[in-house]
Length: 153
Image 1 (cartoon, rainbow, N blue to C red):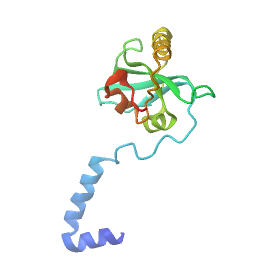
Image 2: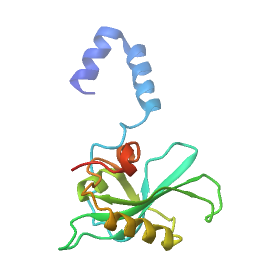
Image 3: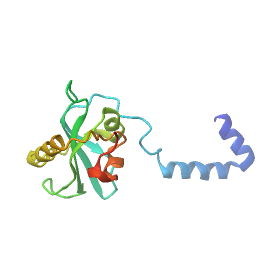
């Protein structure tokens, strides 16, 4: 028993400490976001945070290079239990910084990439109309912003 727990027991009694402990367990661990993904990021599917009734993931299509320091991804969503072919695009293309991507992903996803034509078309459009805007916060925050779901300078 640590000093804080001992002080709480002394002041509140053991039943109050027990109730507080149970409430803490019921609420679960703190929300994700404190620790960015620390492992290498490869091309492929990555899990994102989502509402309990849905599943979100992104597909990394292009890694940073000497010519472009950003990752290029598409962001998708589906309801739990939907067949693999039933999903919708939240962003057919998103240019994103490495730190923003690391703050967003939870780990590899079992979902697979699909319909590369949709991503390719959106990426080509981004290249033509390049405004220099790249997601620099998190995928969720960038999806919530106007201007074609991109943020940053």
